[in-house]
Length: 105
Image 1 (tube, rainbow, N blue to C red):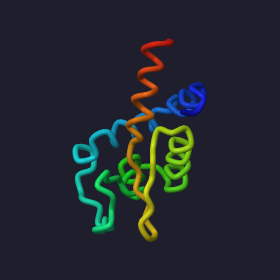
Image 2 (tube, rainbow, N blue to C red):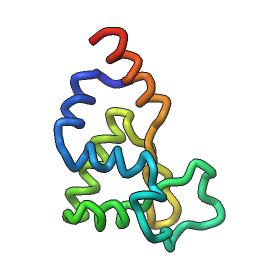
Image 3 (spheres, one colour):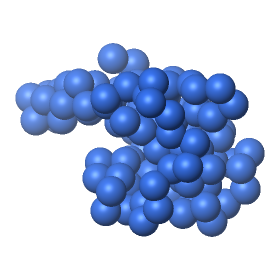
Image 4 (cartoon, helix red, strand yellow):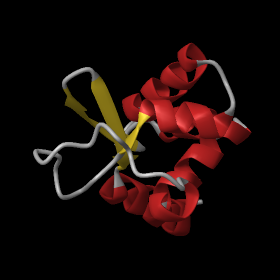
């Protein structure tokens, strides 16, 4: 897991926290199925950047930057299919973060 300070820096932004919440239960937060999802998509699923950008009501470049930051610290993982990238939570790293917070903070 990345430096915990870097993780908290990423989580210091409300939109990035919202993205993490939305991806916890994507069927609840994204009302339309992703049109570009193909049969080769991993069983783990994911949400297309465009759908996240639409829900966040922010520019594509800002949302892409946020997602990259979240991925770099290990909160998200991505899967690319053609021209589309799908993001999902990295549940094992999030669990590890929660365990560290319970034990050490």
